Amino acid sequence: MEFIIMLIVGGIAGWLASMVMRTDGQQGIILNIVVGIIGGFLGGFLLPMVGLQFGGWIGYLVTALIGAIILLAIVNLFRRGRVR
Image (cartoon, rainbow, N blue to C red; front, top):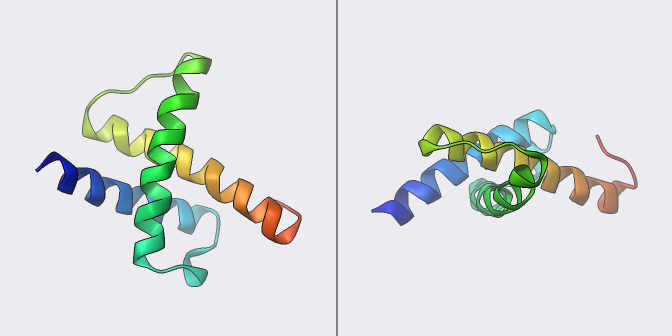
């Protein structure tokens, strides 16, 4: 059950990050979920290094959102040569 919740929260975080970074029209729901989950891992690794830590599913959503935005910024930097 926790895996399903992680997929749902990761998908929401990926979708929100794609809306913030204006890449929503270029990627589908599967890529949104993948970006959200990888962003969750990225955010879970980077945020404690700067002293931020969140708890609960809302904390996971915030962490995944921040990580997904960072991930999309890196992808846009390599794809387009600039961060959008």
